[in-house]
Image: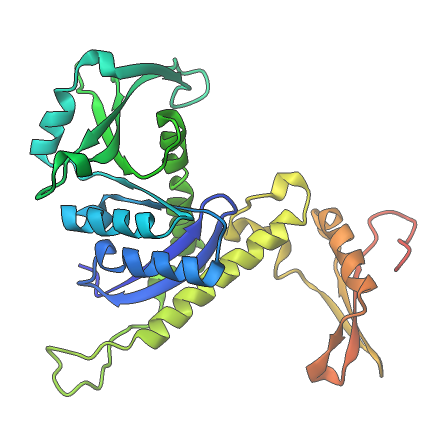
Length: 315
């Protein structure tokens, strides 16, 4: 039973956090989906935005319709959300004729595993209280499971005009967002953000909610995640996409010495195994002649310990 929740907007292509919303525990995804989508549209002004949502954003047909109406009113926006698998709807989707499904082969669950078969149908679903001409485009994915287990059904509501396989692959990129949450929890202690409730509330059974501290620390964790991703992109390819814990273990908290002169602060790292990956970035920073305002504008110089017998030339 969560007392508070943090909802994040996330760029699944570049793996960066876009926005955050702190809420009491009773608030659901469907309550913030519209507002957070509008924040990204207004703040980022993208040429095109394809918003991906889990089923929690469309628990009722009214929630689904609200998102679809926003997409219709906003030309740069497309929306794809997982449809709730209510029994009555699943019964309709399972009753679709076999000829409406197109079979595709995908890679197995791991290296060396046999390929798996999925079948996609492009159909339309009529929401509650609406007419057939208002039906929503629905991509029904049937994942064929061999053996005694039942096939898995994954229906998607979408406003996109792309082909069904493309819509499915785009929606699957939402897994990057899930991975970002896991990194935040395990590498940045995101579950330990300050309490959002006022402990000095007059009625302890109904405490007041303070969004500020909860949302600020949640956003700081997102900014750290983004900054480390930016750092990883400047390093060799093997570090691209590195998690926060990997970057911290590999490059942060390294021992060294500080030397202070009247106009320069020199940071010299002790030699460590991965320092060669940082050399181009160190040379770039030194070339920029960065100054430290709180240290009388002394110039910052970073110096790694040479690994060979010949010292490296500076900028």
